[in-house]
Image 1: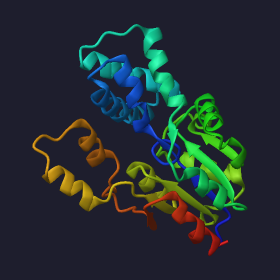
Image 2: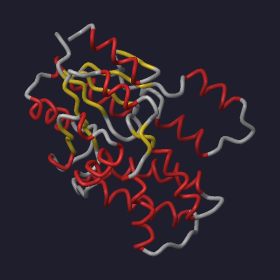
Image 3: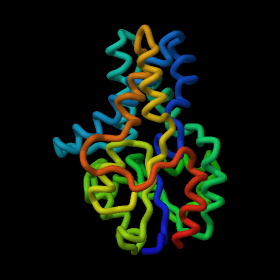
Length: 247
């Protein structure tokens, strides 16, 4: 089946969630790396907990709540308005260096984002990165009131694009998202920003496993759920020849 659309996850795939570290360290000097990693881990955990409990709140609320949890856990004080200002770093994440060239190179294939982010967050994020005009649509889980990897989200992608799952290539770096999309029946490409061997070497050579290494071990490796990616790439630009051969 020809690939008629490429759909990207946003956080960790097109945009570098680690790029908030400058903001967190400026707010709490010496604690930036630890805050950044716990914040992201808890942010994802809260999406899964809310989905399981049936108590949906949008990603902006989850982002602030997970940051509040992180600061309280570390014994750091912050007023709600200050937490909101730090959380706004998620509206200005850095685009991965090759992402723009990849999106431009994939033309004329239809391009979209499917993300946990709220519509307002995603609009801010794509606009500030200058990629909003390259995307046909930006799809938020807000429309189903539940988070990835809820199958209803991947079904929503089909409905919004008017395509079947066989015609869509879904791209993510997040193991849970890859497993969810593949279990739904999509063709999935995994962006591998750190190889398993490189991570094993990093962990084996560390006298103390720091928060960033722990994050890599928990969140960016393939999940063992029997639903792996069809294609593993080391850079988003690797998609360009792959898709061109399958239009």
